[in-house]
Each structure stands twice: as C-alpha cells, then as structure tokens.
Image 1 (cartoon, rainbow, N blue to C red):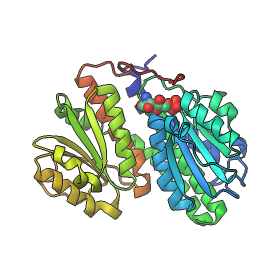
Image 2: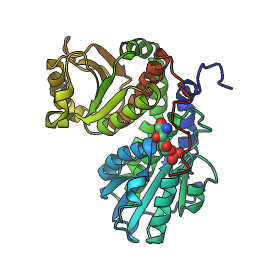
Image 3: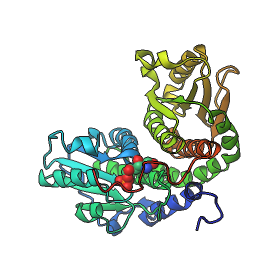
Image 4: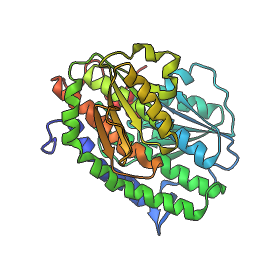
Length: 364
Ligand code: M6R
C-alpha cells in the first residue's frame, strides 16, 4: 500500500511531481491556461474589489502564499482568514467580495461554515479542493479541483503543493484577463510553473542530505523558522509540519520581527531554519541571520541556487535547484517536509498518525 516506502508521508512527498503534473497539465491548452473544463468563467473577477482566502492549517498557509501572489499579480487587496476565527468575527462581506476556500478534504467543518456564511452574505465563492464531490466542492459557486490523489498521512504534503500550483494558475490567468500582466508574461509564468515540476523532483533528490542534517534536531526542544516575503508564509508551513509529527515546539517568525520580541529566546545552539530564497530581501535576511548567529544559534540555511554565504553564517546549507524566486515556495516546501519527516523518524514517532490529530476535522 505504501508503494515500498516506510511511511505514507514519504510516499506522498515523492508523489509531488506527479500530483503537480496532474493538476497543471489538463489546464494547459496551446501554451495557455484554460479553465473551461473546470466551468470557471472568465468573468469571475469582474466586479470583484476584494478577495478573502479562508482555510485551516496547511490549507490556510497555502492561502498566505496566495495573498502575496494575488496582490502582486492581480493588484486586488487580499486577506487570509483562519476559518474558525472568520466565522465568529462578524466579517464584512458583500457581493463584490470573492471568497476562496482551500481544503484538501473538502469537509473541514469550520471552512465549510465559513463558506456558507459567505454565500449567505452574497459573496461569490470559489473553492480549491482535492476530494471530488465533497461538501465544500458541492456548495461553492466554482470549484478548482486539485489532483493530488488520496492523501493518507495526517501531515499534508502533496495537497499543499497542488494548492500552491492552483493558486498560481488562477493568479496568472485572471491577472492576464484583468490586464495587470500581459499574455506573454502569463505564458512565460505558466512555462516556469511547468518547469517547477522538475525542480521539485530534483529537490526530492536532496533527501539523503536532509536526512543527515535532521539528525541534529533529534533532541532539541524549541526551534525557529525565519523568512521574509514568500519565505515567511512558507516558514509557517515548515513550523506546523515539524510540530505535528515531531512534537518539537517551533515558531515561524518574519525575520524582520525578531528584534521585536523573539530574539530574546535565541541562545546558544537554538536551531534556526532560515529560508533565504528571495533575492529582493536577501541582504536583509543575511543581516537577520547574523543577528541570530551572534546569539549562538545553530543555523540551517536554505537558498534558491548557490548564493554567497560566509563560512560562519550557518552550520548547514541546503541549496535548492535555482528557479525564479516566485517559484521557490514549491522547492523549499519539499525541504521543509523532509526536515519534518526525518526528524519524526529519528525521534521514533508515528509519522503518519501523530497523536491527538485526525486527517479530516469534520467537527469543531
Ligand atoms: O482538509 P483540509 O485541507 O481542510 O484540512 C485542513 C487542516 O486540517 C490540515 O491542513 C492540517 O493542518 C494538516 N494536518 C497539516 O499538515
């Protein structure tokens, strides 16, 4: 059942290139994105002046990446909401709001309730869902199915990956239709998204290096993930993944926020996983890493391709296959998944079924 892998999670990490291929390829016609088979009309974003992305856990983290990409490409304000907060906070909603719900199972109780609330308030609704015919899919105006196949491990990996690819495709297509990017740019981005599939496969090949590096996390109690730009929401995902299956306490921090509180927790040998994939803020990230190094942190650095790195900056350096920075979340996510996976294995834990957690949270 596990296809020769010791755990479903590792199997599902390895299935990511196929999951991406299956999600992207049916939507590409003559080098351009086509959502006709999804029944998603070209005018979905017409009259929309605000987008709210809603989900729980990892799905919500995909939404955080979505916010950055949508705002950058579509130039529409986007907020990301935790479903269980949104539904009780008396949100301001109207017919010019597009609500995008993201869910692997399509059955998460809070996400479903948030969707119903949005519909009652007259919002347009679109969902990004993996399970066909699930409640969230059935109740949304539009459904953009991800094609990850069944995900068994409680820790979500391939579902997150295809959620990202779906968000990117939606952003590319509707940015072109809105005229905020040109047709040529849309085609170029789509091509780069397709190339990312190989980059994800190449990143999975780093697995022996990551297995070895993860040994140094086996007996730690706390650690931090830091990043800027797209690397910050990615840090949130790295942190939840590690927490849920390794039981190590971790926190994701926007690197520029360290000085505003968390830096006091960074002392000798505290592990800091530093994501530095975004060239635009690379020098800022390096300064932040120097700050934690000055307090004795043990830094695991992740960069997009080879970057200049001083000898004493990090204990370990993981080099992602180079992609354009906006696609780095795909490759970096693989590294974060493998770190969580191997740390859990080294600690002798139940990787696929961590304590207290269920795959599908259908009750509040
Ligand atoms: O099925 P959903 O995508 O709606 O599930 C949402 C979360 O429960 C889920 O992503 C959870 O956070 C994962 N176990 C994280 O790996």
